[in-house]
Image (cartoon, rainbow over all chains, first blue to last red; front, side, top):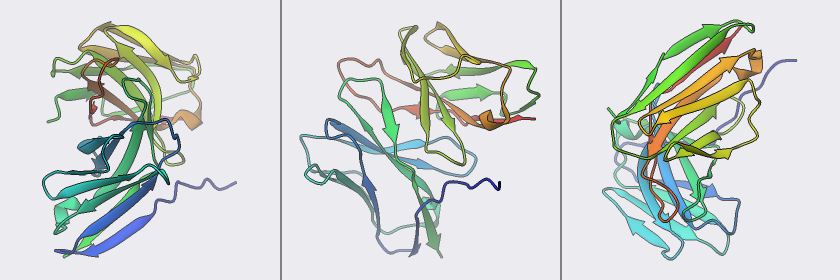
Amino acid sequence: GESVGLHLPTLSVQEGDNSIINCAYSNSASDYFIWYKQESGKGPQFIIDIRSNMDKRQGQRVTVLLNKTVKHLSLQIAATQPGDSAVYFCAENLFGGFKTIFGAGTRLFVKA
Amino acid sequence: ETGVTQTPRHLVMGMTNKKSLKCEQHLGHNAMYWYKQSAKKPLELMFVYNFKEQTENNSVPSRFSPECPNSSHLFLHLHTLQPEDSALYLCASSQERGTENYEQYFGPGTRLTVT
């Protein structure tokens, strides 16, 4: 039969607008979370991380929010730029552990 | 540019071939990882090495054989692969695990096609 690829959720935003990418994580025992960005032809690149004892962390133009009650992460990108176009992955870890579990990813398109 | 290099960048091999993927990190890290990224599944962890010792084997078939001779180099030896093994194989490194969590730095990957 015909093979089917992974259908990534897609977010399309206008340049200059804010973007919000959401992620549901799987393990309630996970206590370290990371957002990665993957551009075409490259490996994933670290953006920002957060530990479970926090519910918000800010970086340069990016903010991560963590809601442990509903096992939800979000990544907010302020003033989205064309260079932000990529696939964004959330990942979860048990603190100090070796196994990182990645989400399926969200594709962000930025319209100029 | 991330400090993690992978060779080759592209590889086409038959099912009876034996080949190896190489990864090298120039970041002074002590943990190294192999991941598989395919069109059908999210990024999958395959193996983890911490201070040259294998600490994670995520139920990977024996036709994939990792080797970590030192903290800077990681290999993935391939033999008798199947077409469904075609994917992007990513190497990553981080500071040592166990007492802290650190982000991983990824190489550009090797695009593998099994014919």
